[in-house]
Image (cartoon, rainbow, N blue to C red; front, side, top):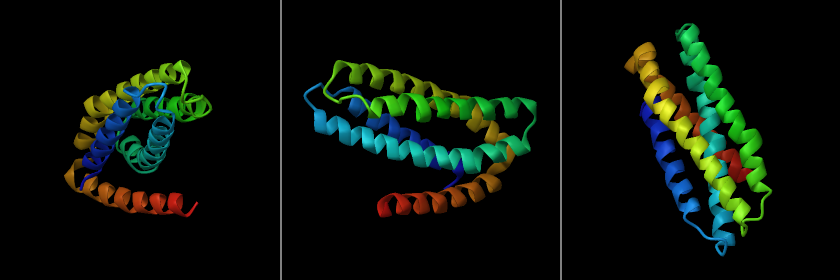
Length: 154
């Protein structure tokens, strides 16, 4: 599987989980907590794959425009990983505030996914080519297994 296909699969999984979380009510305290935990795990692994493998390859192969895309994408990750998600994890799942924060996170992630799939990934296909994307995909699959193993062991 190439790098883009793997990341698009991750996007679909995260979108599905976000949709499921968004449709819960304040009474679904346990379900909300479980879904949020799954989203957190998916995002941590996905972000690591992009920032450690794909983004550097794009930045290295590209020019100034690709460098700007690289930093913008990393900043969007930082916004979710360092600000939005930690706040959400410390918000009681049975509250209206939780629902509001989920909506904001969902909107940020959907925007990020649309930019990646509409701009960054097509750029990666042009810059890197099929063979390199296959190589990166294999590296991502191996890294993903390693990260999932570490999460289970922790």
